[in-house]
Length: 279
Image (cartoon, rainbow, N blue to C red; front, side, top):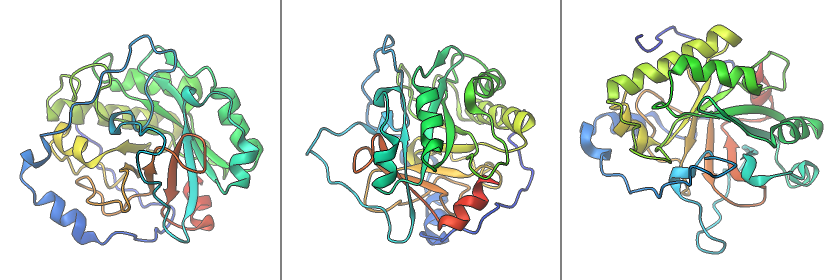
């Protein structure tokens, strides 16, 4: 199945924190420019909470890394998984979080046991929230994992407070970085997940990834930028170069710790734009 190329205009107009020249410069790089990724430690396959968004970036120890700040005027948010357990959502709201992504599933057999408290609790204090799925492309097809995700909390409805589901596709926590797939195979897998999710929900999923992994494991495939919002992962003072095909990020995960439980995120726009993004 070829990657989707159905044009869809985004329902909000982002504050372009990056200039398009960054993306242009990135796509001009040689295909192998990002091949030398750092080796990510393997995750214990028996971990009851599985992987999480940003696993492959490394979780900093307390006090070892700077606490990067969100850009002024942006909307602050967070993402959590089973590793955060029961979240104090009122405290997160009082600290300024206005949206959240919650891990729902992984592969085709893992469900976040804390998902109901995390997903419903974030909405209960007034946040917009969405679910994400940690992809394991070497375990089953993109279609199977998309169905599993939707069937276990990852759906989307145009109710004004549900973010589109997100596909977390990054360095394999259990083995080969690219899950044993060549770039063409990985691109087909992502396209199958994306198309299946859209068929089930009416909305393309966001894609969470790092620029380095995308360049290495999809070969810098630019086909997804037209339809899939980008949730960029980069722990740094600025987003930096984007994966091929995107000219701006919708959400930026900029740190793995900070004022909120879990990872720290910022939405590329204001509150009204965030509301439009959910619709």
